[in-house]
Amino acid sequence: MDKLRAITVFRRVVELGSFKAAAEDLQLSKAAISKNINELEAFLQSPLIHRTTRKLSVTDDGQAYYHQVRQILDDLSNADLALRESADSLNGCLRISAPMSFGLTIINSAICEFMQRYPAIKVELVLNDQYTDLVAGGFDLAIRGAATLKDSSLKQRKLLTLKRVLCASPDYLANSDKLETLEDLQQHNCMIYSLSSSVTQWTCHKENEEKTFAITPGSYRVNNGLALIQAAVAGLGVILTPALLAQPALKSKQLLPLLPQWEFESHALYVIYPYHRETSRKLHTLIDFLVEYLAKESANPF
Picture 1: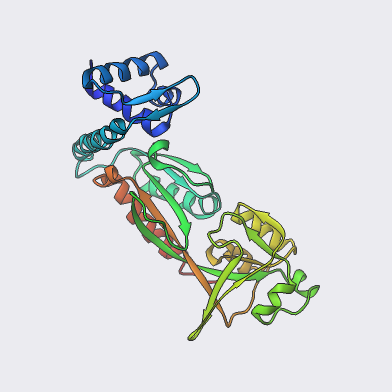
Picture 2: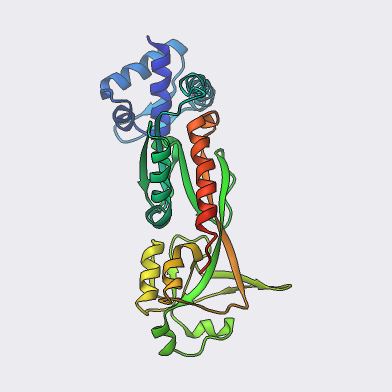
């Protein structure tokens, strides 16, 4: 038995949840995956995985063993990285997950500039607004926007504070009831970003006063920030959105900021990455680059 291969196979089976997915990920046959697991269980004299024709589950011993061998494999990977990434060159591949809207408008441009600076680095960028499991998906890092990130076994770094702006188009405002107070929002078509952590609860403050209030979702819900902005530009209603994302429409006056006396709760853009990538020079070089790039992008308010 090749023990290193066997524990690598075991790890990916646990993380991906099936023999088939692990086979595709490791570019092995399902028979080879099964053979490695069987040999490992025989060597350990303990079942690690219960499998039936319909599902797979990890035993208690398997869970404990997984956490131990994952750390060992991560340490080996870090040792390899330390040698491969020499002091005078950066190369290899980075697999990145990013939200669709920020990915298209900002992150992709940043990564293109990064690759021009470091031409030996290859990048695979996957754009998706849904939650991404970094370990199962084989990602080096992910960029996520949120008010706060939940406790996680992943490392994280804040890239940028995202101020949010309440806005609507001039046409919508010209044909709607007045909008001068927070209470007036109840009479307006408030369109919703459905993946927000606060879909129907908005928080804002001014001076020493803070308010959290419920809004009635309007006629449009969408899971993409750019689509929400396009709907607002089309005159369909009011939106609460990151100012950086809406900056072009605000600068061109296609959207107008509302209730400027109130400052709405900010969100933030974070980069997160698995612990076993902690020693990767190219990963931290990219993160430092993104911090610098996004600071410049956000320095031009609407």
